[in-house]
Length: 118
Image (cartoon, rainbow, N blue to C red):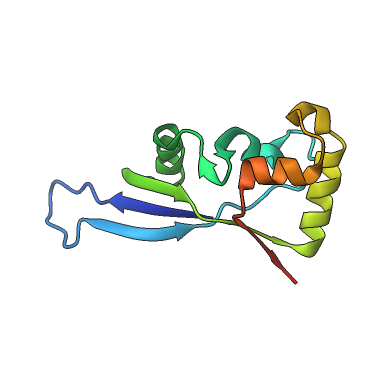
């Protein structure tokens, strides 16, 4: 889940307000998917923060089709079933993360920004 501030770029009309804030939820791929899409966190997050907010803003602009002024990672929300599958997939690749435990990988990438729904 991300918090995003974007602006309307409509030169033919006036808008008030010109900027808006919203929450964007990016659906997670199944842990262990063959394309590696489930590793989204690996590229973009470190200790619960975006690793490259400027570059990620460009990704967000592609998703939203509007200019993005600011984006932050808010939290990772997952079901208990997803958490278990994610932990199994990470455990199978601990060497990839240069970590001794799944907990270490979770902390390194997501920080404490995780919420598990029951």
